[in-house]
Length: 456
Image 1 (cartoon, rainbow, N blue to C red):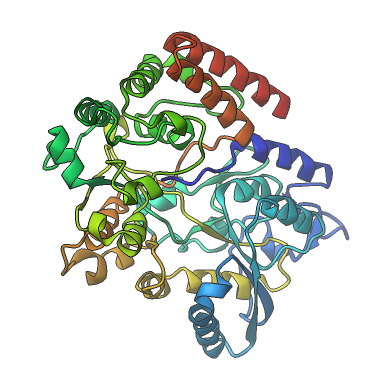
Image 2 (cartoon, one colour):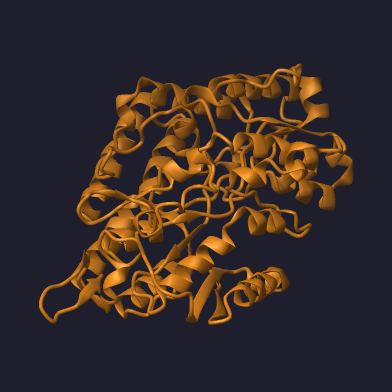
């Protein structure tokens, strides 16, 4: 399933905090020097000119919870970079990636101590970009976009303090979205697995078939809408937030009420375990026990099933998650950014590009211990993804996602936990029959707007 992420509203709060410390980029005047986010920096790091200078000096590279499992791989990447650039050295640090990551990163930015090259998620990158703490990569190297899948590059954009669109991130590794299902259970329910549904409502219709056939012996999926909001709405091209992210607009689309009505109907008819409405558990355990027909949309899920339930794995099918009105999938890549406050920016930019180039992305994604996908065109064209020799579920998932990512975008609606929970709570009331779908949607939007207004 898609990882729950923080939202633009939280990013807005962070930007306000960053603004208090002084934000924006300037070349300065007189003897003031250049600044980035209130920190004094080399004039070459800001402004409109291409970054020049020797690739030398010690830089710090920060990842998020990767050193334990992939220490040897990244140590090798660093060694290769240092060999190619004898004047540069890379110090690697690894952040645990816990729920205080954004707060701690903001504190580093305000203290002018951001790592030179840093692995960021979308919301943190958004806040740091608006406050002027990240290098404008598209300006500092006009050729930086060339290796990446065009759709990913175009959608991996941020907005600076003036409202201008800038590229302060390089899309790095990403996951994918697939439909995983128990072929045996779907056959019992009369669901034709040779024809994947093309819409979310089409998938819901298949869920209903499962409910009617199973009569409580097994289920279609889990009930808690937290896993589907806003992912389903994004796929349906329902606008959850206004363009500036300051107000909720999902109630303006009649399909939102239809979606809630479907969820309520499915819950009432037994397509979902009753006790899963407020549970945070994903389908992994119940699917592995053969009690849920549809599994996680994360392609790595099939490996989990293989390791934990070989008998269910043998019945697992992999298909295309409905494209619906959006017409393609969306990814949620991890990003690599370069601090505008770096004292050795040429070396930092060179290492960021080296780390994310096709050769290194392909090598990492072939690691048997990792289930991720690359964001460069050449990597996705590699026979490892395109010429799948096996017909096992994971091989099929790898090929399917590799094809998806050629047209995927990185854009997904970011909702803060508070806003997401407010919307989910109203949908849950509708699913319990305590509100009509229309009233739940109206109330959800009102509550979301209250929270967004508070966040500024």
